[in-house]
Image 1 (cartoon, rainbow, N blue to C red):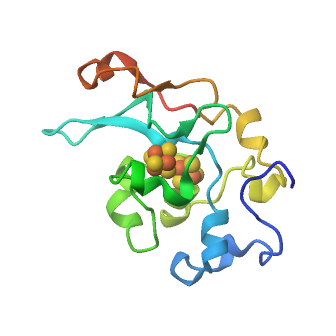
Image 2: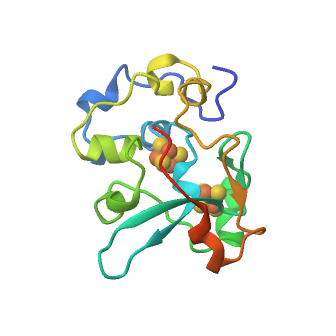
Length: 157
Ligand code: SF4
Ligand code: SF4
């Protein structure tokens, strides 16, 4: 799994099917992330309806080629508002997370998709399946906030 920035080696076999989110180790929790990058796209939320629209305007730290945060360990120094998904916070944030997000799926009692790196053994499978944001984004540096509406997209599924 040399192409995978997340170390998924040595984890309990199919732990995500048996271990509750709150009982996973930190490594098991981190390994749930499929690396799609969709949670790092800016969203627009309708104040009246609560409806969330996804845009292709990405956080300034998102690397469009790898779909990873370019400064993950120190990201809060640059993006203090970056939200950390934890077993405790997932309930609060599930409504805006992508439909394919592994954290949301497991929290809702749904299985992982067949292309998830934990099942395929390669991080490329999320890109091959066309569900990541690779090559889709434009940086928030380049688009004014009041123009985000022009960049609304459907979630790649
Ligand atoms: S949407 Fe979920 S699975 Fe995809 S990168 Fe974000 S946290 Fe990981
Ligand atoms: S700081 Fe990194 S993890 Fe947070 S939204 Fe931006 S790219 Fe994603």
